[in-house]
Amino acid sequence: GAHAKRGPVGEATKISCNDIQLVQNLIERCLQMYMSQKEVVLTLQTKAEVDPGFTMLVWQKLEEQNREFFQAYALRLQLKDQIALFNHLLEQQAQAMPKMAGAPHQWRGMSTPRMGQQMPTMAPMGFQHGGFQQGMDRAQGGMGGYYPG
View 1 (cartoon, one colour):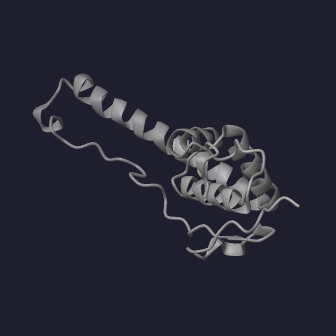
View 2 (cartoon, rainbow, N blue to C red):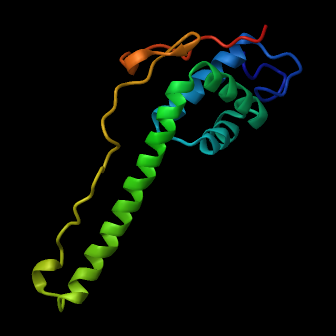
């Protein structure tokens, strides 16, 4: 197993295919939550005791095998950040408007509309061995196999 008597994943001198598959699966779960690479590394280190260097190695191999996916994913992360910033600015504007308008009573207690309360709906992720799965139309499936030769 990944934690069998030899410390956290990635610290052993010999890494098994199961360790690699485990980290791939954990990375895929993090990607479904729109985490950045830095967030994925930190999450796997703190929650699953995965060595950051090992996570980075698996991430790099996945990126090599799925370039198009990771390019699209980077754009989605930018969109997520822009939506968060927009929501923050919208909140600030909503708070400032009553002050500017002499604080009429109808403004108090109104809920602020939020853009993108949830991330925009996107097709589920799916990976094929050796490349990006066209259309990302399958909810099931792993990231393909990266097994060091």
